[in-house]
Image (tube, rainbow, N blue to C red; front, side, top):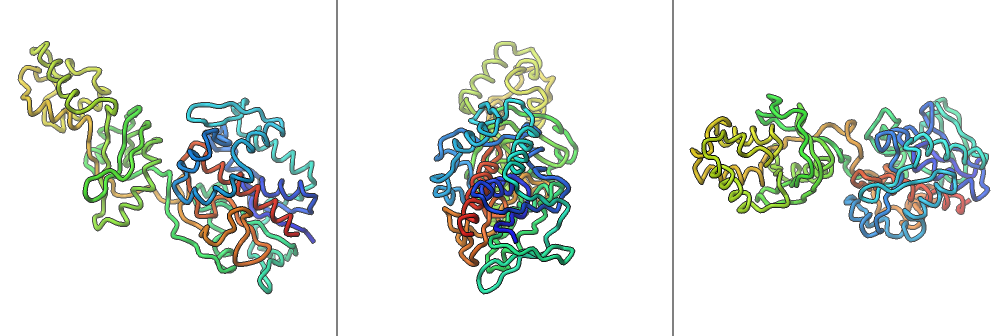
Length: 418
């Protein structure tokens, strides 16, 4: 009989198994896939963004989906503790832009290997290719697990660490939700977050801007009154189906929420291609550039104001022939170019599906979880951690921080329960 069974070999499951093993407990880590740490191995573009070094307040601000729930957890184990934890395992980390922490090796596999070596040192039993069918509960407590092949494995505590429903090829296919529901937990509505957006605009269908990246632009999601709900300033990309890139991924959860509120089948997003300049100054600059050489083609006079493809596109939106001489352009048209460079509105009709998202929104309600221990408030001996919970953040080391912290606490407290 095991003391603790951890289901799921992702970031939170590996952390939970190590934490329980460090307490000298007999631990089984079980995963339906053929190897552990698959999500870790592909995270951060294969470099593994293990955490973020920003202050706790900032980290929580970057986890808009119930980040505040993590205050208690961070008081026990936080991002600095994650850094120390990995360095003690021999994984040296380096800080990059916006506080993102990566292994010096630039290889996610070095992070996975260090965790697997630690499991070995602690004599944690690992079973891969072993799907779990159910969790067994009796008289308000966990009793063990039932495998797909009908084998029962008795244990005192169970940690659910199976992830959400995004990136399903790593094994996250939503297995944990029915097990939690059976224990009496509420599953909030699941939705894709950190996901590319789709648009039916003609210029998207025509692939006019496909492959064009705009650097350091302000992207806003607008409510039905046309006011920004959120603005993110980062890079973005036009695709054959809509929009992608860091700024778009960060805005995506707000698009999902606005679409739900809206009676329309679309919401507007606004792109500010020149976020450091105000519209009036841009209009003056356009006026000056076109006035200085009135016989020059407008596309040549305004070269450098915006990326060339985007400039030509905006001129087309203003019904201007790019080869027309600048001296022929009316003041009103110049103002229109300035206005579009500050707020080009695009209809967004949806997102790619949940299985194409980087992160799952929604999940097991955090109101039913003890915030300092990750213990279920419904069943004794049940612990929940990682993306199966209704916690979601932006990309940049925030989701993995949440997974590692909640995993650590779940494993530790599962061990204490035994």
